[in-house]
Image 1: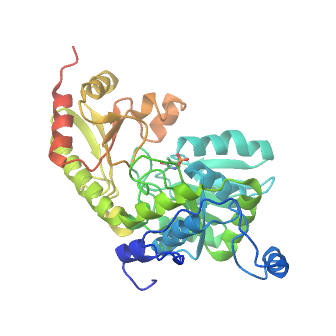
Image 2: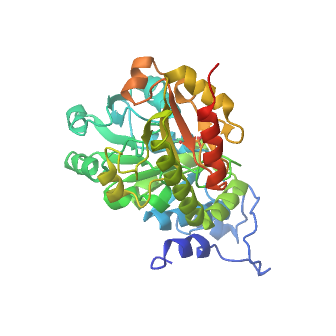
Image 3: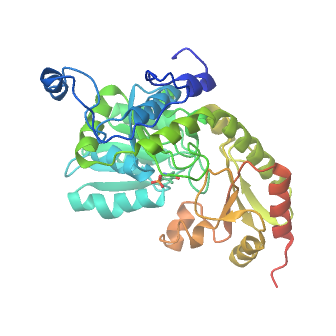
Length: 392
Ligand SMILES: *Cc1c(COP(=O)(O)O)cnc(C)c1O
C-alpha cells in the first residue's frame, strides 16, 4: 500500500478477511483471544510470537484504524486511544520522568493546558510556555532537563502557525522530542513527520470521525518510540473501543473527499467574510491576508476547515451574532459535517485570564466557525443574516 495514493491507502488498507468473505470488516467485539495451545500462549507472552492477547493491548479493528493512519501520516508505528486527551497525556507521560521539563506553545488545547499546569507538576514535571510567534523562544526555554517540545499548528482558535521544520531543527540539536498535535490539519493536509516531528498525536473526534459521533485518539511515530507508548498504554488502559476503531477506520475512507469540501467551503466563507463591512478581521491560513500565508502553503496542502473572525463592535455584537444564527449549531465541538459557531472567550477558553487570552490571540469578539459540509450558499446566507441583525 505504501506506494499508492492517499485516497487509495485510506480505502484499501484493511485487515485480513475471515472465512465468511465479508466485504466490509466485521467488528471484533471481544475482550480476549484464544491461544492455539500452551506453547502458543507462552510464546505470545514472551513476545516471541505476534498476535492478539487482550483488547487492552490490541484489537483488529483498532489496529486497522491506526495502521491506516500511520500509512497516511508516514509514521512507522502507532497506537489508538479512547480519546484525543488520552493520546495527549500518554504521549507526554510515556517519555517524561520526575524532574523533566517540557516546552510547549502557549496556544494549546484547553485540557492540554490543564495537563501541563495542573497534573504534571504533581509528579514533578514542569513546563515553560513559548508565545506562538516567538520562534527563538523555544531555544531560550530549553533547560538541561527539557525532554519534549509540544505544539499544535494551526493553533486553536487563532489559526496562527508554527514552522514545524524550524522547531524540529532546534529540537534535534538538543536531543529533544517533538510532539505535534495534528488534529486541526489531519494527515490529509499536513504530515509533521515529514518536517522532522518525532511524535504525531490526534484527536480522531474531530475531522477524522468528521460526523460528531464519538471520541477517539492516536499516537504515531518511530517504532522504538511507540514501543514506550505501548508499555504505558497497555498497563494504564486508555484503550479504544473496537466499535470506535471500526467506525474511525471507515471514517478515514472518506477523509480526503470530506476535507476537500471542508477546505473549499472554509475558503469561500473566509473570502466572503473578508469583504463584509460588519467584520473586522478574518483569519484563514490560505487567505493571502494571513500573516503566515507563505508558511501555510509550505507545510499545509490546503487551509483547513476552520475560519475565525472578529465581529465589528466586540463582545456584545459577537453575542448578538451568535444568537441570530438560524442554521449553524452553537457548540464547542469542531470538525463535524454540521457547521458550528463557537465564542472561545466565553466557552472553550473561559478558564484563561483576559491577559492570557490576549497572548493567544483571542479577543472578546472573536468567533470560530467550523465550516461543515452543508452547501456553502446556505452557510454564507445564515452567517450573513446573523451579521446584519441589529443588536437592539
Ligand atoms: C478536541 C481536541 C483535543 C482533545 O480531543 P478529545 O478527543 O476531545 O479528547 C486535543 N487537541 C485538539 C487540538 C483538539 O481540538
